[in-house]
Image (tube, helix red, strand yellow):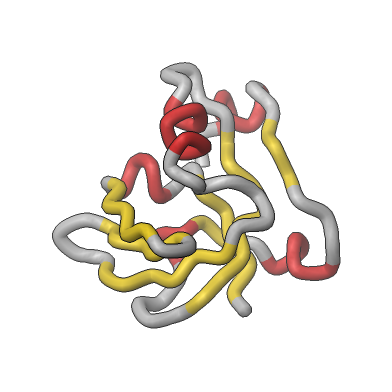
Length: 93
């Protein structure tokens, strides 16, 4: 991960699962996970993700990895590119 991104701060969930967090890009297809962190980048992508329900504490299910990452959050299916998927840190369930 780009060190500059970590300097901008994060929104994090606490708990035991937070220690096992990995970027969404490392989650295997078909796995469910809880979002523990969304990295705040210079472009404000975290705002878009937040508006779509990608927030710490939410449960996501990774439907596909190619050609884009498709995740189910609640009753919605959301597609994000690899750049955005790297900003989403999850703890597999």
